[in-house]
Length: 109
Image 1 (cartoon, rainbow, N blue to C red):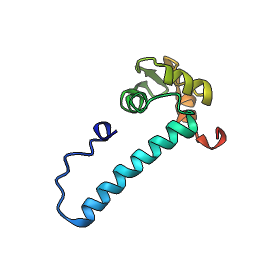
Image 2: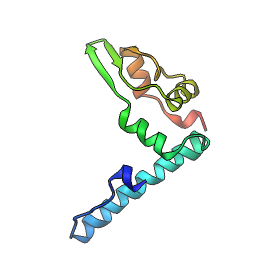
Image 3: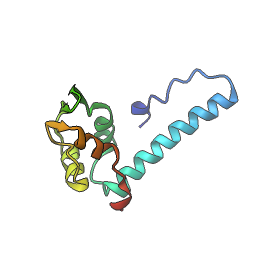
Image 4: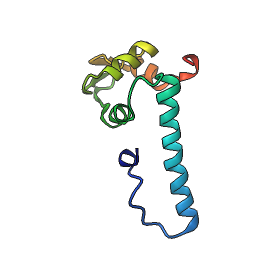
């Protein structure tokens, strides 16, 4: 996971900066593992999750239209099905984007 989080090398000298960096990296790992185990029921690898985080892209075409240019994956399809969000749709409108941005995982657990 350190590879995906760019946790090394660290060129920090002040103790507070080192502790802050460690806290951010630790929280990233913790949140990823909670997402992987609790939400996704350990069906997808850390590699697949980080690939989703880094490669999921939507391009705005106009004020009310977006284009999903992400490569389809089993994880995107599973998340779309699980959350009923339009994550696997090619064309998105303003309400689709609002639905995605306002989604909370609390109802899935």
